[in-house]
Image 1 (cartoon, one colour):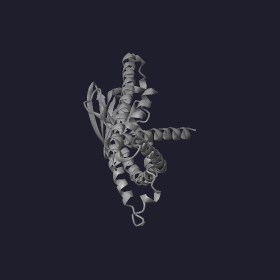
Image 2 (cartoon, one colour; image 1 turned 60 degrees about the vertical axis):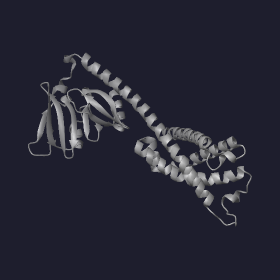
Image 3 (cartoon, one colour; image 1 turned 180 degrees about the vertical axis):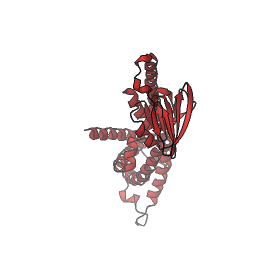
Image 4 (cartoon, helix red, strand yellow; image 1 turned 90 degrees about the horizontal axis):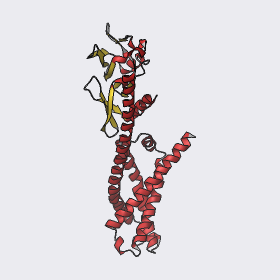
Amino acid sequence: MEDINQRKENWGTNVKDSFYIAVAAVVVLALFQPFNIDEVEGRMLFILGEGLCVFICTLIVYFIQSFFPLRRKLMNNQTSKLFILNMIVHYAIFTPLLSAVLCTFNMWYQHYPLTYAWLNEQGHFTLYYFFMMCFWVSTIGVFIMIWQYYRFRTSRLQEELVDVRAINALLEARQQQIADAAPETTAEEQRHPITIQGNSQNAYLEVVPNDIIYIESMSNYADIAYIEDGNTLHATLRITLKQLREQLQQTECLVQCHRAFIVNLNFVRSLSVRSAGTYELDLFGSDKRIPVSRANADAMKQRLEM
């Protein structure tokens, strides 16, 4: 049922995007009037007809792309890189398809035999008109691609700002809960140190897990930043992040926020947008800005909501 609902939502997005692309094409055609549109009888009706062709062809291409892993991946994880790659693939299919449809439509609308789009004056098959149409479709497509990317970035920025506000509200509530909690209500086991064992001989660190601020992975080493007697200290161990996660899996406040970082949610002051699709954390007890990927930001939000 969830898969069916997701498909319906994706196709709702495809139909909406197709409509917007068709409207953008109509606007560009009306403003620039390429391939002598100004000489066509019933110019506005002709432009609207071409807009309908754009809408139908866009839907067809989206249907074809729905079988591509790239399109499915974009629907699940919309990054700028994936969006640009998807647009390139989209227009590689869309340009020849729409050009062929417009060649036929233009002949039909102007009451010429449909074969005129594909035959020269001697009656031999030619792709000259088709290639000219491809040129115009590609040229207009550049303007539409720029508009699509701007619209995508604006939408992503709005979504990221909503996510940042929601997560910061949860972080503020968490800090308030920590401040309101009486010291005697703190569980005794939270103050018990554990021994983190490294891969080198005699390489270990005794630390209270809740006092760890963050852990940064550096290849086969890890930098562990923690609080001891009110001071921020660092310890470097030869150990992987995966091994550390296994040793600290019982500490719920420690979450992985990036492929190279584990962070203690109790030390997170706020979240802010770092760049498109990524964020960064401001921490108590450290000046280091911790990167957060979008996927891990969602996981961190779910942990805060628990």
